[in-house]
Length: 116
Image (cartoon, rainbow, N blue to C red):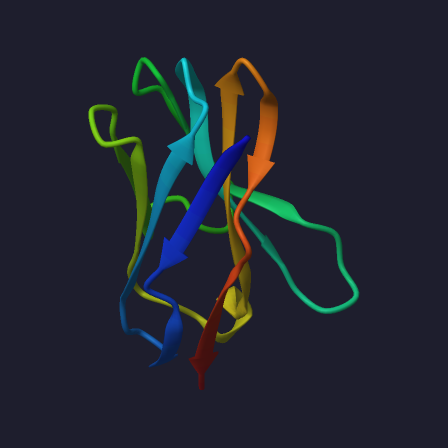
């Protein structure tokens, strides 16, 4: 079992910045990928950013150029620096990891609210 603990959500005005962090612990032999998804009420959970064990990254088009994902392989942590936040970025953000063995795991979610 893998446990993900998120931190750093909150309330910010449009144009501001927030940083989300997530630490993975548990039965981890190796982490293949870590990332962040988000969900708004009534919608599915969508990918925000992903980073592989080789530091390859992928971003949703809506956040590219504003958000930066990074990870510390030694500490099994992933962070998401969110700049130039917009009201439409308001969502619950979920930390994600794919590990071996075990598969996919999710954090409990962190609320990010951007006021206009």
